Amino acid sequence: MESVEVEGVANEVRTAYESGKTRSLAWRRSQLKALQRLLYEEEEGMFTALKQDLGKHQAEAYRDEVGILIKSVNYALENLKKWMTPCRVPVPLLAFPTRGELVPEPLGVVLIFSSWNFPIGLSLEPLIGAIAAGNAIVLKPSELAPASSNFLAKSVPKYLDSMSVKVVRGGPDVGQKLLEQKWDKIFFTGSSRVARIVMAAAAKHLTPVAVELGGKSPAIFDSLSSARDRKVAVERIVGAKWVPCSGQVCIGVDYVLVEEQFAPILIDQLKATLEKFYPRFDCLSRIINEQHFQRLSNLIKDPSVAATIIHGGSLDSETLFIEPTILLDPPLDAELMNEEIFGPLLPIITLKKIEDSIEFIRARPKPLVIYAFTKDERLRSRITAETSSGSLTFNDTMIQFACDELPFGGVGGSGFGQYHGKFSFDMFSHTKAVLRRSFLLEFTFRYPPWDAWKLPFMRSVYHFDYVTLLLRLLGLKRG
Image 1: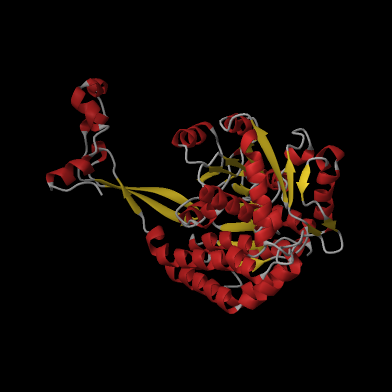
Image 2 (image 1 turned 90 degrees about the vertical axis):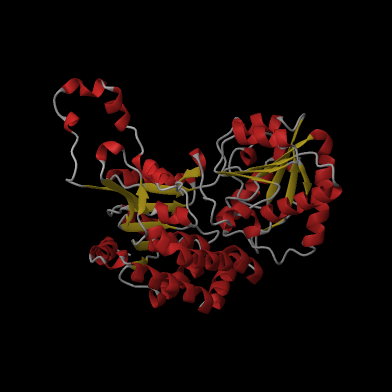
């Protein structure tokens, strides 16, 4: 796409936004309902695109992308009017009679860059929030998932307002041209390398940016005394490591921390679970392309790393398939342990004491999520208080991603900005402070004599909450 075309797209969307139509409740609801219809009516098209791009089974495609999106758009429709309603806030007695409100307003024209591992889910999830907040949007899907990109380019204009919501296809050159335009918010999902490019371009226009990255998300596996608890914990780790997109997912388990004495138990159960769940691997996704296949292959071809493989490790370059692979104590200075794996390789790192996992995690960049399998309340409290991550989940994996009442996002090197549910609406909105003052009363101490502020009564009015006082006089409580 030529730069002139990109500029034209940006101008068209801004014109649509400045017309004011995207601000109304009616427009927002109509677009969300149209997106809802797209998800129901174009289900087979989404399944086909995801199969072509990543080899995703229909069950995986529905669970991880289509079904999640239906839940999200339904939630937005149910709560949209409440989210848009201004919120009353108390103001000091000094300003009586005055009304203070927090009024959400759209940011304007939003640019969304989505990633290839969930090419439809991570395109439409932020789009839901941007529409709910009343913005006009340009969506740039990943060129590494061409079938999904083509599906979005064909389907979105068919259902949504084509002047206010546009899909732009293309490679890095198109992305660069888009970044040269002025936006009111940029939302990016992808790698840290590209995120730096996005942020540098955004800085030229002082454009706020939300970046969803990833990192090395660990799982802490404590010594669970119950055989059933261990079985459930292992199944959940397997489900988070190899089920979604063959490990090509930012919230998957990157590595596991376990005490030396319990490592054999964990490994045996991981192997048994893999054999039970996946006697054949044709239901798992493939690696996205040859470049990423080669990157993952190189990680385990390192002789010092290859020597630590205790399960799996086979590669098929023709089908871009890598067998689920378990490694025991690979060198900590190897690339495998210093870069996000983003593939079906699972290192097991042994520790003398499970409490050492806290220091192990703290010594590394902040992860997107920490998973901890433990029934020890003291250990839970220490992990919560002493580690930092985008989210923290005990005794399960990935479930936090599906919770609309919980924000999703990273911290530090794993990203910044939170979305999902109301958090998506907030991320694409500006909360404007609105204060309405009456001419009815005026306190003369605002003017000379200047030492009136020294009086105890005058000091107290600055901090007094008259709303609470009025409610108490009426026998009510602040709700």
